Each structure stands twice: as C-alpha cells, then as structure tokens.
Length: 585
Image 1 (cartoon, rainbow, N blue to C red):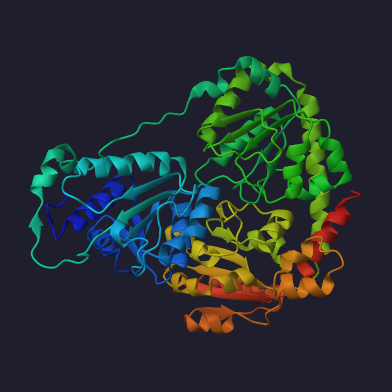
Image 2 (tube, rainbow, N blue to C red):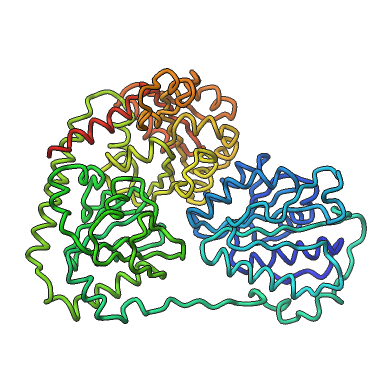
C-alpha cells in the first residue's frame, strides 16, 4: 500500500505518517473513542486499510479493551482519544500495561501551546500526565512545514524501540491547530514527502532497530556448575502464552528439580508441576522437603501466592537466578543474584543441553528423584484434602477448584483480581493453557473490558471469571463484550461486596469492616445483562452450573453472563480452612 500524497491539511499528513509508521512497526488494531480534537488521528486510522478499528464511547473501558487485545495477540494496540479528561481516563490502563509488561500505544490529541493554561475549553497539561509509566513519551508540536517529515517518522521509531519492543506502553501526544476536519479540495504534499522516497516506496519503518538475545547466559560454566549441581527448585510466575512451557518442563525433568507454578504461568496444573504450591508450603511436610534447597530459579514474575513470594524472599539460597523477557525488577525480597533477559524457552533449552553435556554426572540424581517423588506424593495428599472440603453446594471455592476441568482444551481464561485469582491459584488442579490476568497493578477496574479484548483477539471460546465489585465497576464495558462474536462467558461471583477483605487482618472492627470495606450492595447482574441484550443465567447448584456453562460455551452469538450468588465470607472461610487443614499434613 503506497502512502498517499494528497491530504486535506498538514494535520492530516502528520497523522497519516504516525499511523502508517506504527502499522509498519507491527500494529494491526486501533481502538478509537469519539472526539473532535483527535479528528485528524481518527480519520487517518479510518483511512488505513491495514488496521482493524474498534470504537467505544468510554475511554477508560476502551483502553482496557485495547490492553486485552494486546495481551492475547502479543502485538501493540493503539488507543486514540481527544484532549482533556479523556486522556486522564486512560491512566489506569497505562499503569496496568507498565506493571504487567504489555505494549499499549496511547495516541492522544492536544490543544496547541497558545491554548494551554489560559482558560481555553478542554485544555489541560497533557505532557507528562502519565509520569514514568510509559517506556517512552513523545510530544509532537503542531505540524509545521519547516519540520522534516523524517523527524516525525524517526521519532516514532525511536520511541517504539524504547517502549513497545520492550513490552512497555508508549505515549504519543499530538498538538493540533484548526482546521481539524477536511474543509475543501485535497492538496498535493509531494514537495514535503519527496525527500523520503526510500520510505515512500517501501513498507518498512524508516529506522529499523536491531535486537539480539545475548548467548552469555551459558558462557560462565563455573557459575552454572554451582547452580545446576545444587539442590534446586524452579518457580514459575506470570509468563506469556508465547513461551513454550514444554521447554521449561524439559529443563526441570532433566534436572529432576521440582516446579511450583503460579496460576498465571500457563503451567499451573501441568502433570510435571507440584500442584497446590501455596498449600504445600503451608504444610509441615512441604516445609521439611524444601528446607535444604539452596538454588532458586525463578522464571517470569508476579506471584498470586504471598507464601511463595515469601519462600523465595526468605530462603537460604546460594544462588537465586531470574529469567524474564523484560528488564523490570521483580525481586520483592532483594535476593536475586543473577537476572538474565531473553527468550525464556531458548534459555531453558540451552541450560538443558549444558547440563546433559557437562554436569549430569556431578549431582546425586537418586536424591533428587526421591525428593521429587515425596513432593508429588504430598501434593496428592493436599489434593485429596481440598477435594473432600467441598460438598454438593455451588460455592466460590468449588468453582475455583473445578472450573479448569470444565473448560474445553482450547478455551482461554481471564481471571479477575481479589478472590477469583486466589481461589484458582489455591484450589485448581487442571492444566489451563491460556490464562490472562491484570496482576500488574491488581486493580478491579477495567476487567470486563480487558477480558472482552482478550476474547475478541482470541476468536475462540473464552471465559472470564470476576467478582461482583469488579463487574459493577466496569458495567458499561458490557457494550464491548457485545462485540465478541465467538462464545464468551463472563462468570460473576456475587458475594454481595468486597469478599477479599475477609482475608485481611481487620481485628475487632467487625461492624466497620462491613460498612467501610466489604460495602454490601444488594445488586445483581440480571438487569445489567438485559440492558445490553446479553444472555443471562443464575445457576443455584453444581449440576446447573455445569450445564449452563456448556450451553454458554456453545453460544455462537457471543457473550453470556453467568452469575453465581454466594454467601458473603464463605470463600475466605474456605481458603482459611484449607490453610489450617494442611498445616499438619
């Protein structure tokens, strides 16, 4: 597709250049909120045949929707908004993108300098509005002919290299003077564009930044001998679905090291993993079996389990090695001795080969196998205990333990914050291969929108499980859920308020806890679903839940809401009883 030389204004030229360059850098989807100051950007995106466009009336929901698409597609996604508070509404999604390592491109329109800080309408200070959360922030002045076109393009390329390529959000702020809309005949801008003939005649970015993964990870043989012949454990946190879990499993199998896996790891419930890692570390036998480990290998970041986080922070490690695909520090205990950044599956494959070739005979493999067998046996004892804890009632704990086994193999799952993610991380034993969360900043805002973005990018059946407060917080994003044309199920666990506060040490403030923290609301999801013409079910027993979930996953029209009303405080009680019960095992 050739870049056009006819445009309505210089605003249109610059906007088209920005959109085209982002497309050449790999962007394929653009989320647009209506607005006037952003008209040049919107019209440029609308005219670009290579972009899929999504339009939504709420900037906050739209930005989380874009975040979900980016999570699932593993590509940066553009969000276009007008000036003013519309820009501020993107902030929560920008924070989550930064904290969870998602390449989100925030493309905001702005008033020109002469309209800032003078009382002009819808004009706020937008430069630096997102502080240090973007990996790069680019502030374009109002377009002028004396500014080279190449400056616009190379600025976009450089900002992209510093942010999106590293899994970080990016902010591009564009000041526009009027006219914002086409006013007459198109103008030929060949005289500005001709100097960039190599760019005009290609489909590549103006500047291509080259990256390589350094193979230094396996160069220090002396160091890796210390690690690989030691008594080690692999702990897997949040990693993307693009990582080959079989490479991780292959490394652990070769080393005969146990694996503990977070629910966000794409490995949770895998046969090679020690299940119920959180409860295992709460059990007496589990503590004994892990007490003398001296080598820790962490892969990925962000653990739901505080107990696993503390285990890593407080262990007596000789070496604590971190593998990740980004440069962010994920070391709450400040214990990591080495942090390697690169393709995780490639690093694991290299280490496996190194161990087999050089260090295989330098360790006590029988001792390692015995520890592994004992840990798996202890894990099975905990599974039996957890299974016996649930009766025939439809409870949050039962759903957390069994939801994974009820999903088709190719079904994606988005897990909401607060109780849902804790319930699945603690109780679930099924291997769920395609899991998404917003655990970067762990807010309850934008979860319906993010899940909808994941679902629409998936194109296959998709399930989201969230709490009632998260659902209420993002009701208007059900308009985005309607856009999903494949089976999409939103499970709402309604315990009438902030049930997660029952897990916290609130002491004797029982009355205040209910009023000020748990905030019971007495609402349900029925009318909300009806408002958006979304199918709604409210099962009251386990068999109903199973049947209705199967029915919803066959809904070719798209979205279904399944609301499960539960007893306030019950889920926290189930989690607490499980922890107490396994303590003596």
